[in-house]
Image 1 (spheres, rainbow, N blue to C red):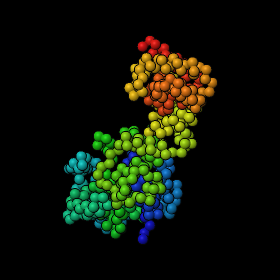
Image 2: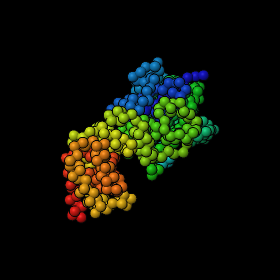
Image 3: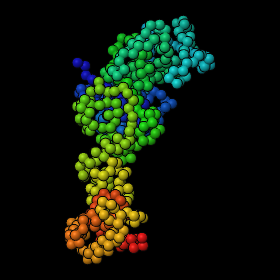
Image 4: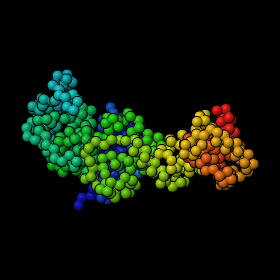
Length: 485
Ligand code: GLU
């Protein structure tokens, strides 16, 4: 059996958005599931789209995401160079283009801009496409040579038949047959000498021994032309898996422009790598048992590309948030604290026990950015409405709250031990002595010390964090508000 070899082949054009990450992840999983190799190839032949620094983003993202490549520009595996502009310098693309010319499967084209502009166009998938009329195919060998000798600019085009059909197989879409008459004579080598993606992907995937190609289905319509190239060379076509589009909640295409969809943006928003990877894996793939939480190792074990679905995947941020929350709950506390600390410090400037606060919010937040809204009241008591003291279930209202706060104030003033346990004991004693319910006492106290309806902890835990002076200040303020109500 041949060893599985997959490749992630990004163009360095900007941030790595979720769609790119999914291709990389699936390529990685397909290879690792079978003990194969996962390779990184940088496709930088489109000089106009090249963005400075984008290659670094690719390295950084793969590393952070845990998608370690076995081969790539920084790791030679014997199939280099791994950057297309460097491959070009070896003359590989020209060599194969000339081989096609010799076979009659490609030809030089010297048509200038004006002539091309005069050719008829067709609308294909919403884009205006120029249909080349094979004008230069009729040039004699001598004419071609004279043009080349005169240094006339040229491109090399694929020579597709005008009759018959071409069939290719995609793992998700099955067999696809197209009329050859629909295949334009696409450019293989551009006038600047660079290969087009259309040509380079075939030459590279073959010469780098790639067995499985995973990419977005925007390449599906060009694939018959790639298959014709494979056949012209007599090469074996790799397994093709064209992934369905990822859309946003409005079923619009996710774009690099919508900031929330790049891997690094998601990290910045407080999502953790494991949750992002887990979520992205499920954008178009599901395991047999519909289990949802997977570590990367578990994904490697379970990933069967035959279970990828061809229906569009919706990037649902609500689901991702939920999944992230599950990861935070399960996370080791020290790891959690290390990640949460900068977010805590952003909101809490005073000298608090941040570890205790972190343990209060760990099971309550979905992303780190949620921390602020849960803990901001520690820093400063918010303005709040006295109506909050009224709670049906706790059987409290303004009058009962005023009574409770006034009665517990002297107890809390004389209390020295401001630990959660110490405070709890004192308040429970008061509850027992007065014969009322726990919530009847704790609700107004918690309201007074937090100014919030929802808090990540109970009254005594909050007071422990605030300390005696601040707790008393807040209770007195509560009494003042209730008296004036
Ligand atoms: N360079 C192409 C892109 O970034 C890669 C497509 C492929 O994987 O073949 O879209």
